[in-house]
Length: 322
Ligand code: PCA
Image (tube, rainbow, N blue to C red; front, side, top):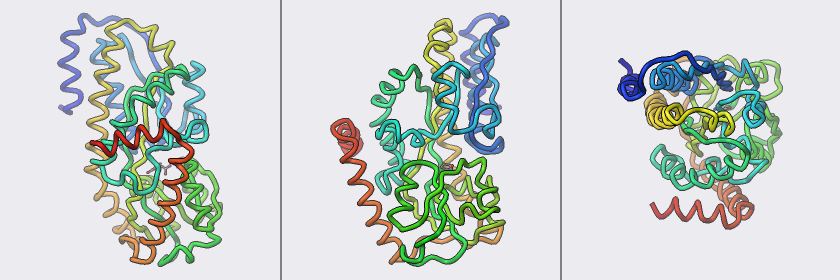
């Protein structure tokens, strides 16, 4: 039995008799086969077992219920009671949502966990003010650059159409004199096929999910940051549950965060192997490229710190103090 389900099955003993209850639709933005979506399904299963069927969560992957960029609003307004989204996609709303996409600030799983620990309290408060309850967050594998051709310097990138997924990736494109275009992961394959974009930054996971080897040849393992998906509930829907169901959501969320993060870490190398097995050149950036990307990263870190003010500084201080 899966560890997560096993623990949840233990919790059900405390949960009492089963009774017919509520069903929550849970929109998720990424492919059904993606590990975030699979982990969301385990979370849903754990909640179902823990509540003895009182709360059934039905996962809708691949942006099938709401598109990625619609999910937060849908949950805020109660059109969906719960959902998952890329946290840094909301940086335009509040700079602090972009804390996990500052280049080279936290570029390992260990550092990502520390940064999450340092930022979670503040993010929870911001989301609570938006009628949302933060449940859990799971990082994507480290972000690397995908291109059609070999790239040895930032100058080689000039003029390339670059698919962005948040404000930071668009800014990176600008600083490298590329042309950013926002595209959801669900539409990435089509964007590459039609020439809307010829390059992007993402994890091996998204390259694999979208079979990007059909269009691109090179992956540079820059390990620039590990952006996080987070799962959140509508606060009114959450508060409307009985205490037992709320506790089940919280405990299943804790398990899902650990299980999902472990899975992300375990799969990181495997995804890169798959890119290579499908004909891509997978390698670290060359010395010049790495140095020039570090400079762009330093510019972006300074811009983020300036925009994030005292609240941002408090998060960075807490992160560095760990
Ligand atoms: N995949 C998502 C976000 C980060 C990642 O690794 C994407 O490319 O949209």
